Length: 216
Image 1 (cartoon, helix red, strand yellow):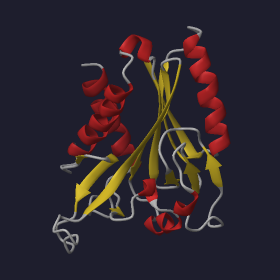
Image 2: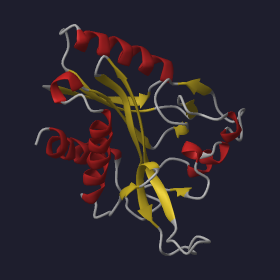
Image 3: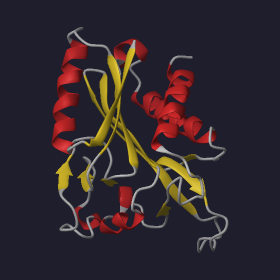
């Protein structure tokens, strides 16, 4: 059984970290169910285990937190739905790559409910959308933007951290970092793409897609 929790307002990052640590330990001890926690954070940057200092372009723009998740620098802030996923992979298969692939499929299936075609890209973690209305890249490829980020941590085969999907964040805040260490592509959101999706709409789509992806 997976418990779904939605927090209103903005959840401070240290508070989220404490909750995830405690929940993971409770799941391991058999004292709590798995959980998907949906929330928003105040504006901030987080550094994953592969973060490079040179990718933090504006270190004084927002508070920077060491997250100990996989990945590099990313941004969190209002208008972005963060989903922290605490699942027991002892019961779901001890395969980190398969788990990350399912997270990507979950996001892709969620966005498809709004008729948005998004997908994976080889060598680039996260979920991406094409922007054919913009000039092509120097090598002729269609321009693309990132709409969702993924960063996970596993402790004794229980997952935490998770995904973030841009609904309507201030995209200028991304100028403070090179998101995920990739500077050849941009960042977008559902509203930026002309899709007036509310956070409530996204939450419902996330829950439907989660069941189709993880419980099938």
